Image (cartoon, rainbow, N blue to C red; front, side, top):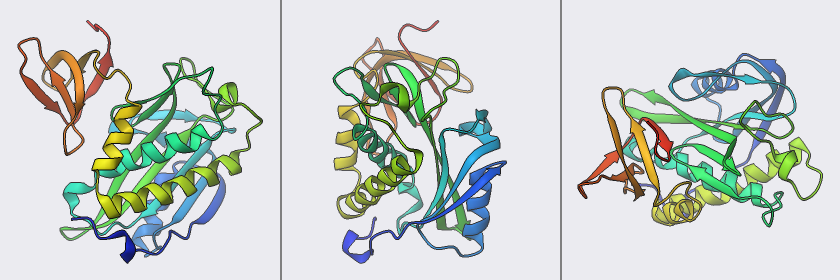
Length: 252
């Protein structure tokens, strides 16, 4: 179970900025293993070997937010996946402070991306450290395109209603994360899931889920209690997708 939020003091963010590093995730893991407390944030101006889900590497030039932070939730290991939705909702709320929402549409793509006008703007990576069989820490990686975006992606500066500043945006993200993290600790995943679904990308639409050994097609119907994607097949049977590559629309 998640501990009551009143058992937690507010997160005291400690921000360390480095000019360049292969990966902020690696630095955060090292700091966590050395005993760094919850709330340490390592931010890089650029990364030389940035990684995402499934070990995929990606370009991380200057002009964007690349940060990894340490959380030490007192929860069962089975609930760690909740944090992907906690971070996504917090990041979405932070972007609302800067985006011109009358002109641009933001959606949350399962399991860990934020899209604007259908193009990727941000991604989230969760990695854990264990102490024996118990959870020790969660390293949360956040990459947000602020001024630079690769092909077929977008950045915050292109859709903002006013000039944006990297460190101001970073601080807004951390403020929103503190609040959403506290909500999760107090009330669990239910209110987080509802907020995520309000902005879900492709909800009620056709999807193709590609797993290592099979492919499923159907309708994206919602999220399971554990955060898996509910896919309704043509025969009305429902399956839960907990990991895999999801493509929206009638993918071949």
